[in-house]
Amino acid sequence: MVFIEDAGSAFDAPLDVVWKLNQAHATDVARIHPSSRNNQMEMVNETTFVMSWEDTAPDGQIIKTKARGSVHAPLGTVFEILEGPLAGSKFFNYYIPKGEKTGVTVVGEFKSPVMPDEQLKGAVLAFLEKAFNEDSAYLKNVLIAAT
Image (cartoon, rainbow, N blue to C red; front, side, top):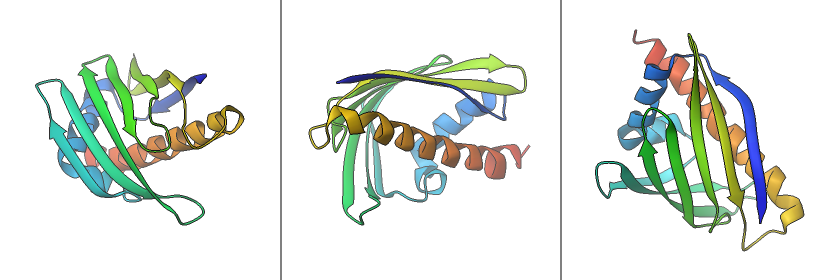
């Protein structure tokens, strides 16, 4: 298990627009994350959801992932990876309002049944960077463009 803190990134949007991005994941996730497919989301209750998706690894292998999220607006979302290469990982994605920008930080304990700890940090940071970049593109091209 590896503790990871990924801090310092910021969305070019105020917090209220970033929350619209979070809400859009329920209905527009394929457009937000075009590299994923077979996206499914089920609301468990008002603040908890379970989502699953498939992605392609650099070696061409299909990766299936399932996660449970608990929304704590406007602070962030707690995630637990239930299935996939990061199964058993738990992390908190939280936001810091910075005027017209919103800082985003991820902290958590990550583990993997398929890779050793010394490879885990790089894999997690790559996963988080990809998600951030896709979220940023959606913010810019869809949410901000609509305002």
